[in-house]
Amino acid sequence: MINSTSELIVTPIIYMKIFFRIFLLTGCLTAIAPSSAIALDTLQVKVANMSQDLSFLTKELAKLRLEIETLNRENQALKKLLDQIQLSETQFKDIQIKQDAQIAGLNVALESYKQTLLIQISDEMEHLSKQTQKAIDQLAKSATPVSTIDALKFSDDYSKEGIAYTVKRGDSLSMIAMQQGATVRDIQNANRISDPGEIKIGQVLFIPSKK
Image (cartoon, rainbow, N blue to C red; front, top):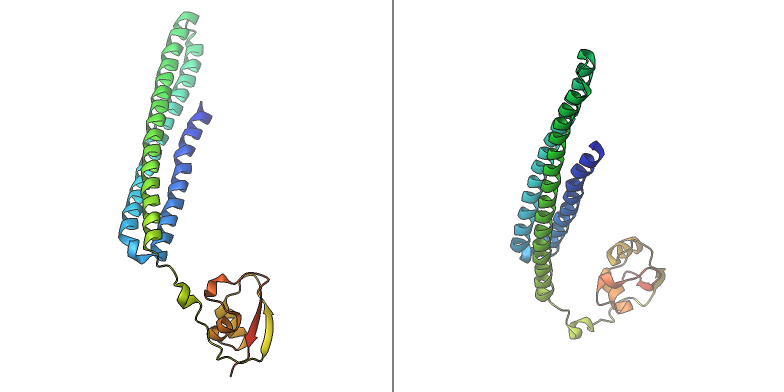
């Protein structure tokens, strides 16, 4: 009986972790696209409110668990008392049945409470998922595509002397330029790289010497 109650209390904690990941996701979206911060702030507030509600509900479940444990202890104490005063078997069974009925009633209430909570959480998650997807779609629509004409405008105004460099994990054009004493623009022109973020691990780049 105590194990099932523990599982009941652990369940909302799992959902709280899920909501915290959603909260981090919405926070990342806000950092990527400040123009959509207002729409995502609303989602963050709702997630925070749900986390507070879950914390409250978890405390309430813990209280119910304590009540069950108290009844169990009282039941054990009553058994000892009945043994001491040598009550008849019939009387003992009647009292035990009443105690068991009280515990069963609390368990039914806990299970009903759990089902209601799960339904509410499921509905809220579905609603938040739709709003998050809507915000992502808005971000995708508002993203400005890179012009093909601008991407193809490269200059030959760079040193034709230099070295070959193989891209490693964690490298970026700015980091490579700083390490090799070159400029990001010269590396882009020499290797026809329109987007500095497009370099790949294992890619060999020509690093022009600094003029």
